[in-house]
Image 1 (cartoon, rainbow, N blue to C red):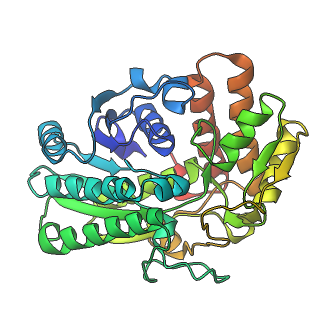
Image 2: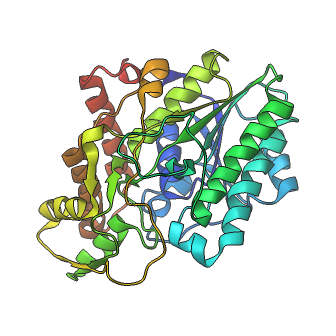
Length: 361
């Protein structure tokens, strides 16, 4: 992680759930972080609760604004770019499918287009989703060379983004000696500071903090749950590898939990309840909801083989980290900066205890 000290790093979507944790971690590592987002969020959000706006330089810009995105990237001349800006909600994609596709596909193309003109050395990491795969709901994990698909508008929009990445890479960017590109796929991330609509953890935390039951749409669906810091550590590992060598230029990597972290939604809620205090939930699965996959798993062997990356937290600890963050938020009513940094330090120590190479000093 030392590579990031004193580096200039652009994060698109730095006010979002993943983006805010990435911005905080990179700032802690000594990087100069520059954020691009069209939303400067009010509370509740990790970005505001942890005071991340005071730690980074922010451009309030729509990722679909081709000229502004180009100008920011060319003016700043970053050492690294992490592209996370997206419409990230499956249910919202059914309500506004064209906007979802526009943000996720055109936004990605705008960042790629700016890279065509950038002449300084730069590593660009594009964060897509595990939902890019043509999900047949089979019991084994998808590998990076499996087919891209998309049965719902959100999945399709991420598939479009990956097609744009492949097209720009092969047409314009693969021959640029100053540039290396990586693609990451992860999903079902939980952790403190997520208040997005129609997500399981935020729905539970908001309801339980008021002493209310929560309604759950798909309690029997199985997901590979992982803490937000797990894939972020993968993004940082990949960016470091590409900074050192171009051997993996243009390749995609899955970042997910071990196979034994695949649990049903109902099991996740029950585990959260154990840490929060026993407040129940209601089964709303008989109501009419938009299609969501029941099973989706990733094979992460490539990340282990090429990056020496592996997850550091088991399921119980993942849930404990998550619930503890919200408990602190709702009880202390203070800035979450120190608490969030301590979770990053604790996560790093957990990786170090497992002798995961990126955590070595």
